[in-house]
Length: 427
Image (cartoon, rainbow, N blue to C red; front, side, top):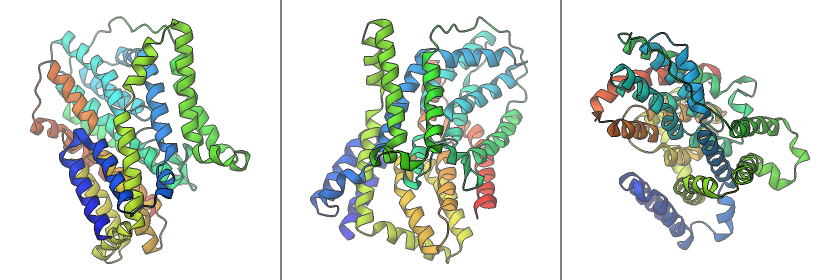
């Protein structure tokens, strides 16, 4: 256990201080866990959650096709056309970014919605800073709403055996989707207050033209098939399909999209570009982390960390739940939430086992804190970094203090709402 704990500590320090090399650090650590005999070689393949890996890869491909079709820009144009002034345009774009982000990667959402806000600001000769910050933090907020909303949600689904519909109704009670929506409504009130002076009127320009609707149907098809897979009796499926059904659906729809695009353009160019855009770095990071987590679990480190939480709380479930949520908020404000959630999911399960309670309360509290907490600071989430990058290209250098004037009240409102609701529903 000592060797495993030292390896794990070095791994996490490396992930924190050398973010550009996270995937390589995780893979090197995984090799060390195997070389030192902490994790038997026979368990390596089973340690990696291939369903999660395939889901993320397939979703990335379908989403790239969806963005290339320009459908998100058209939807944003239609929303702006109905808004009376800048305040409502900013809030509606933030809401729209949140809705899209429940099904599309957060960074991709920012990259497709932020240009609309920049166009509006240029036309009105105003600063796009407030609107792009609002879009970025709203994208992060909705990541926990559905199974495909964010990598952390996919990780939870894989670990807890949750399907697409479980995020809406889980064991007869409201799921995370409704908790996130309540947080979104509360945080939108915060945005309305923050932007109450933005009353300039907006005139609609020409709408974006979309000529290819197939990528939109592929994205909708992915969601529909994930729902159907949730309802299908498991005994109808062979063992491999039962275990990897969600990943197989996402990869299959991606390949159908590729085949359609090749047939339509008679070229591999766009498909090649999309294949290059897939975030292999994150996929390798997760593969390495799965092996590392299996290693520390095998060595007893996960149970030791769980026992520490239990002792620190005096076996009080409310204290443990509160610690999980707010420590997750604090840590996610400064470190990437993917390795944190991947590490803490087995810890959360072990805590629940030691206390003899349903782990759902701890799982949902972890996701609320870790997903929403990244909004506190400019570096807490990739979507925030992407949004600030767009502003930098437009000549706006945003200081951390200004960003946090918007992000802190927004995040505290959303997390507090989610924290209270999860406890009321699942305690």
